[in-house]
Length: 80
Image (cartoon, rainbow, N blue to C red; front, side, top):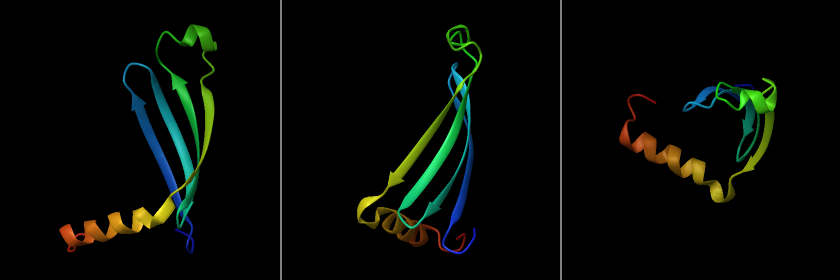
């Protein structure tokens, strides 16, 4: 975390299809995320084993994240 800016990273697995590596940034209700799909299915033949990049910009309307975080604090305050 750098000031209001938070770093996000992930490793995901799509069942019998791909491994997805990703990273991004988050500030207030806007985030940007870059990921790379590594094919592990028969799609390798179509993509010539190259996978693919994906980029997303996400805007959350109405401050829903804040409400979710407040609810988590109500449920288990001693852990957060």
